[in-house]
Image (cartoon, rainbow, N blue to C red):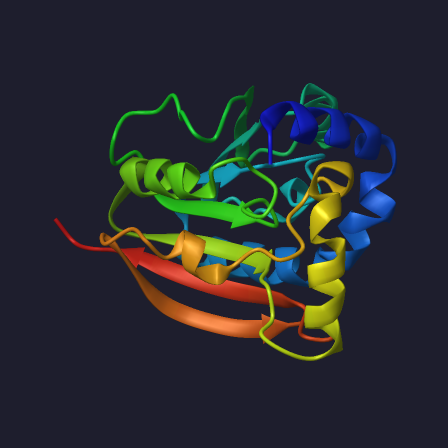
Length: 206
């Protein structure tokens, strides 16, 4: 998927995102944030979008959120300013393929429903691994392609509409598991209908 297509797609979706995709992804987002709150420490949320997760973070964490879409990020900033969310330290416009942070900066990196949206997800995962501290964890919620069944059929026939929809309907899980430094720790199917997957990857200790 091209970056220009992602940008234009999310400019279109931004006004209605919270009431459409936001509802569909709410279970995964809630599970991810609960897990992150339990860990504490410095958190990077890659693809913060309209900021739907921001009100749920507790004072146990210090959150930096990034997003490439200025339209989505503007809504996240308004949520932050309107509610004085103290765990949220920074909201920045940034390309996830080139994170402007030093190596080993964050205790936790969250990627909630973003990896099937971004161009070059392998590069994004490499950057996530780079900025994550040794022993740190990546928390992922995402839709991944199925091998069989009706939903697998739907994924295949909608795949040519990637640029229009703004996400890869047939996104393969193995694309995000290629970083040798990251080891899969948790993998669970989550609602609705088990369409989404919750994953935890741990970075190898130094």
